[in-house]
Every structure is written in structure tokens, then in C-alpha cells.
Image (tube, rainbow, N blue to C red; front, top):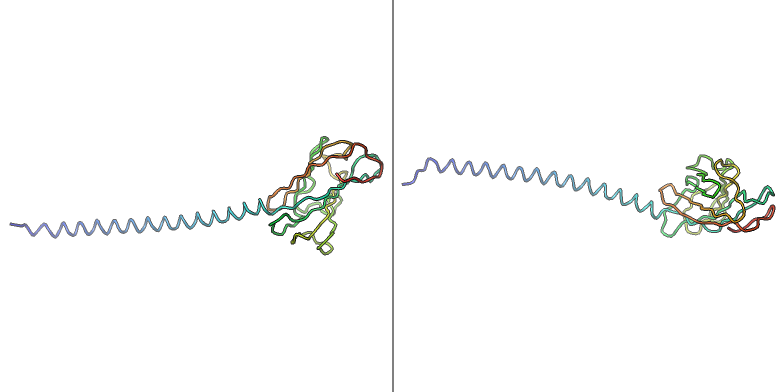
Length: 193
């Protein structure tokens, strides 16, 4: 009738195959869970960095140009800066300032290398203590003074020149403002650009 000697071996073989499949599935699930965790952490970090780069910026308000030497050219710029809407605090002394004009391009400062050394000066205007350069609230206002003569690579600005001012915050967000010098620059005068 039935051969009972072979039936037990088939059952053990099936059990071994089933256990092997369960072990392989468990290992694969562990690898997938680990990979998903790593990808989630990396995506979260990338998202935070991207959000900082886009949102942690300053707004450039009025920019006033001065002729301090009396030679009918803008030698100094004073730009009022404040936090953009939704921005986290920004340390303005660690920002990079780039001025691009027809007579040359110059990165005025990168980080806090030359702050208060003649090229860049900070004047606390509203909501900040003396010596403080971190904009924390929307009400904080800081004047950034840029001496064009103290920086190599750029000349004082002449009449009817178009100039771009770019401020890059430490997180990487950029603010861009295009300025135009007046048609006539009087000796020793100041102008809103």
C-alpha cells in the first residue's frame, strides 16, 4: 500500500526549506528596515539644510552711497539689513558680501575675516546691543558699511553705473539687490541707490 519510510523525509525537507525561507525573509526585512532608517535620517538632514538655505536670509533695505573723498565717486555703501520673514537668526558678521560693478567684481568679505578692519563695519540701529551682529527678530535692524576703496578688485562707483549687491548668509541663502548710481555725483554728497 503506502510506503511510510519516505513520507517522514519529505516532511523534514519541507520544514527545512520553510525555516530557510523564514530566515531569509527576516534578514531581508532587517536590511530593509535599516536602509529605510538611514535614508530617513539623510532625507531629514537634507531637508533641514535646504530649508535653512532657502529661508535663513536677510532683506536688504535702503542702500546709501557716500562720496567721502570729494572726487565725485561713491566710495562707501551703507546697507540696512534685517531678517526675512520666517528666517532663523542670522549672524551678519559671518555673511559673505559680493559687489559686482562694471569696473570689477569683488567678494568683500567671506565670514568674519575683515569685519571692522576697514572693509566692513556694522552699526547697530534697532533692537541690537552694541557690538552685536546677530539678527534674531524681525524688528532688528543693522547697517552694514562697505568701504569700496579698502577692498581690492573693485573701484569706487562712478555716475550712472549699475551695481549688484549680494549678501549670502552662513547657511547659504542669498539676497540680491540691484543698485544704480545717480547721473550726477556731487563732491562729498550721499545718495539713496
